Image (cartoon, rainbow over the protein chains, first blue to last red):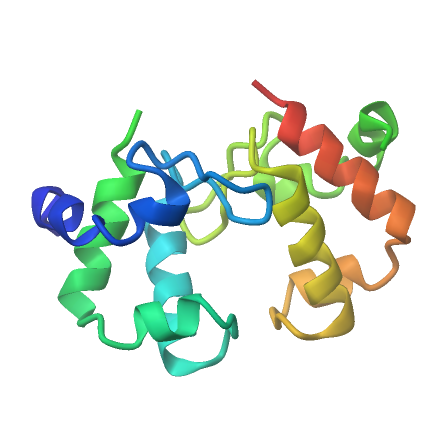
Length: 79
Length: 79
């Protein structure tokens, strides 16, 4: 996984989850330092609809497997 | 919410999510310092089945609203 590519892809995520992975609203999770495998699993679940959320479903839909790995690596690596 | 009561209730959670809120396995999320409102929302979703997980569904099922608030306060407060 390429955390730098993930960082670039995460520009849109930052609007809610923060550029540093600390979210702006109490209902949205912090992602900073979260486990990469967990983040990947959740992005796949939002994409395939097994986890439903009106915001995250459409966000995850267009992501490739590679995008998902890269995003997870980026957030997991934030200190 | 009563974080001390949440800490007591979290004994069973610690088996996977860690006594300090850092999980033992990459597929399970860290909960340390997570937003309380997000944690509450997810526990309610596991309980009502709108978020499905073979482990967390049965874990959340018996929790009262008060238990959920207390657990969320406990994990949100971990530094």
